[in-house]
View 1: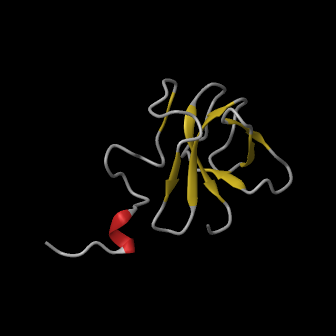
View 2: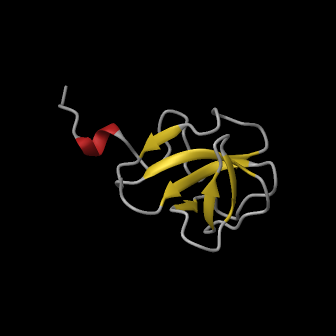
View 3: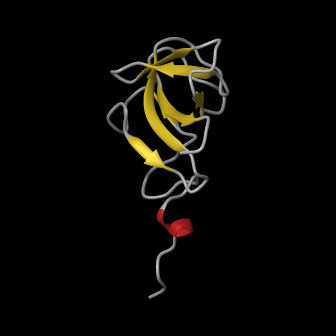
Length: 97
């Protein structure tokens, strides 16, 4: 068996049931579930508190709610097609971890 490397420990493509571009009205994970992607970014599972575009800069509340932020809150939605209010999806930390 080959040794695991940092490139094989985490993935930004679907692995073990995690689709970082996925979204849904029913939560697949607990809000604020954290995942480290092999792209060097941290991802958080959030719930949209308003309609969000796929590349909105967002701020994330303590309960995992995501809302649009005109500044630079440090998180970007990672949901192709965006999210409607109440949908769950992954937000990506804008800067590297």
